[in-house]
Image 1 (cartoon, helix red, strand yellow):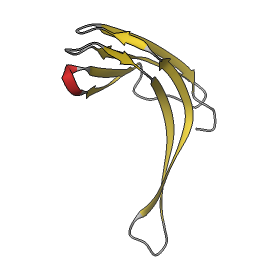
Image 2: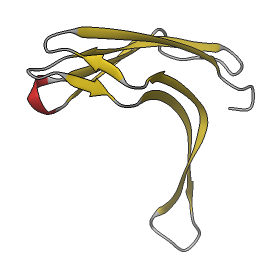
Image 3: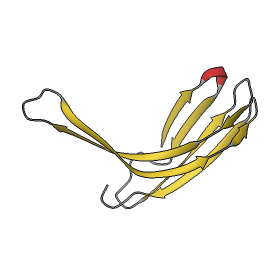
Length: 101
Protein backbone atom coordinates (compact mmCIF):
# COMPACT_ATOMS: atom_id res chain seq x y z
CA UNK A 1 0.00 0.00 0.00
CA UNK A 2 1.40 3.38 -0.96
CA UNK A 3 0.39 6.90 0.05
CA UNK A 4 1.51 10.22 -1.36
CA UNK A 5 0.36 13.58 -0.05
CA UNK A 6 0.60 17.05 -1.50
CA UNK A 7 -0.29 20.45 -0.06
CA UNK A 8 -1.72 23.37 -1.96
CA UNK A 9 -2.31 26.99 -0.96
CA UNK A 10 -5.03 27.76 1.58
CA UNK A 11 -4.90 24.39 3.33
CA UNK A 12 -6.09 22.29 0.39
CA UNK A 13 -4.50 18.84 0.48
CA UNK A 14 -4.34 15.82 -1.83
CA UNK A 15 -3.61 12.20 -0.84
CA UNK A 16 -2.87 9.43 -3.36
CA UNK A 17 -3.34 5.86 -2.13
CA UNK A 18 -2.24 2.86 -4.22
CA UNK A 19 -3.61 -0.51 -3.09
CA UNK A 20 -0.39 -2.53 -3.57
CA UNK A 21 3.37 -2.00 -3.18
CA UNK A 22 4.21 -3.57 -6.55
CA UNK A 23 2.26 -4.90 -9.50
CA UNK A 24 2.91 -7.44 -12.23
CA UNK A 25 2.74 -6.69 -15.94
CA UNK A 26 -0.80 -7.04 -17.26
CA UNK A 27 -2.37 -6.72 -13.79
CA UNK A 28 -4.90 -4.19 -12.49
CA UNK A 29 -3.64 -1.12 -10.63
CA UNK A 30 -6.14 0.44 -8.26
CA UNK A 31 -6.34 3.01 -5.53
CA UNK A 32 -7.93 6.34 -4.77
CA UNK A 33 -7.21 10.04 -4.58
CA UNK A 34 -8.67 12.08 -1.74
CA UNK A 35 -8.84 15.86 -2.05
CA UNK A 36 -9.36 17.79 1.20
CA UNK A 37 -10.83 21.27 0.89
CA UNK A 38 -9.06 24.20 2.45
CA UNK A 39 -10.32 27.53 3.76
CA UNK A 40 -12.00 28.72 0.56
CA UNK A 41 -14.34 27.07 -1.95
CA UNK A 42 -12.55 25.72 -5.02
CA UNK A 43 -13.41 24.01 -8.27
CA UNK A 44 -11.37 20.98 -9.28
CA UNK A 45 -10.83 22.04 -12.89
CA UNK A 46 -8.99 18.86 -13.84
CA UNK A 47 -7.62 15.80 -12.09
CA UNK A 48 -6.12 12.60 -13.38
CA UNK A 49 -3.89 9.69 -12.40
CA UNK A 50 -1.08 8.80 -14.77
CA UNK A 51 1.16 5.78 -15.02
CA UNK A 52 4.49 6.69 -16.59
CA UNK A 53 7.36 4.50 -17.74
CA UNK A 54 10.80 5.84 -16.82
CA UNK A 55 13.92 4.69 -18.64
CA UNK A 56 17.35 5.80 -17.42
CA UNK A 57 20.29 4.79 -19.57
CA UNK A 58 23.92 5.84 -19.39
CA UNK A 59 25.27 7.54 -22.51
CA UNK A 60 28.73 6.61 -23.66
CA UNK A 61 31.17 9.44 -23.10
CA UNK A 62 28.84 11.31 -20.74
CA UNK A 63 28.61 11.39 -16.96
CA UNK A 64 24.90 12.20 -17.21
CA UNK A 65 22.33 9.54 -18.08
CA UNK A 66 19.73 9.78 -20.82
CA UNK A 67 16.33 9.99 -19.09
CA UNK A 68 13.12 9.28 -20.97
CA UNK A 69 9.60 9.27 -19.53
CA UNK A 70 6.59 8.00 -21.49
CA UNK A 71 2.93 8.17 -20.56
CA UNK A 72 1.50 4.63 -20.42
CA UNK A 73 -2.04 5.10 -19.06
CA UNK A 74 -4.02 8.10 -17.89
CA UNK A 75 -7.33 8.00 -16.01
CA UNK A 76 -9.39 11.18 -15.74
CA UNK A 77 -10.82 11.58 -12.23
CA UNK A 78 -12.34 15.03 -11.90
CA UNK A 79 -13.37 17.86 -14.14
CA UNK A 80 -15.27 20.90 -12.90
CA UNK A 81 -16.12 19.37 -9.50
CA UNK A 82 -16.87 21.86 -6.71
CA UNK A 83 -14.85 21.52 -3.50
CA UNK A 84 -16.47 23.39 -0.58
CA UNK A 85 -14.26 24.59 2.32
CA UNK A 86 -13.28 21.78 4.69
CA UNK A 87 -14.90 19.09 2.53
CA UNK A 88 -13.37 15.86 1.32
CA UNK A 89 -13.81 14.21 -2.10
CA UNK A 90 -12.59 10.72 -2.90
CA UNK A 91 -11.97 9.52 -6.45
CA UNK A 92 -11.30 5.82 -7.06
CA UNK A 93 -9.26 4.60 -10.00
CA UNK A 94 -8.50 1.23 -11.59
CA UNK A 95 -6.73 0.46 -14.81
CA UNK A 96 -4.84 -2.37 -16.44
CA UNK A 97 -1.07 -2.12 -16.62
CA UNK A 98 -0.04 -3.12 -20.16
CA UNK A 99 1.84 -6.41 -20.47
CA UNK A 100 4.87 -4.69 -22.04
CA UNK A 101 5.45 -2.31 -19.10
